[in-house]
View 1 (cartoon, rainbow, N blue to C red):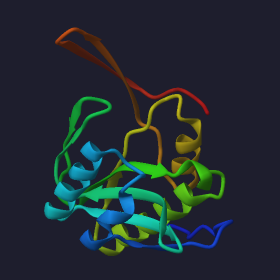
View 2: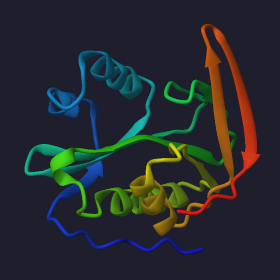
View 3: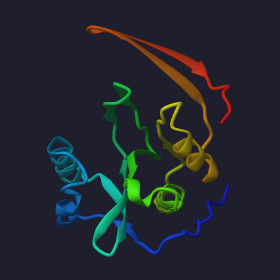
Length: 165
């Protein structure tokens, strides 16, 4: 299926971030996440950003390796010719301009050009905007995961996704 670029409703520069861009994240993410981003750059993870002048409006990360997903508390297994698109965030003042869809489309084009055959992502069920953005660029909802956590006990229930937006 061809991936179409999406026209933005705002003028921004979209590109892969480099480690020198780290300071642009100060004030956007907390110190713990800032250090996590530093580690991701050291591990050769790729971060796509949208810049309004020199200010970050959006970011999203790509990994070709297994990743621990802290929100869902699961290890995401990434196989050969697969990628994981994760930790995507639109800065609140830039929401409703189509950044998430447009940058995800650019990331998918980049990944397809790199020979990637499958891209994995996780979205909270109640995050309707992200779910719509992912569907717009061709993602399909496959499974729903329910995490039951009581103290240190964790239990996951996996079901085929049958929900609608």
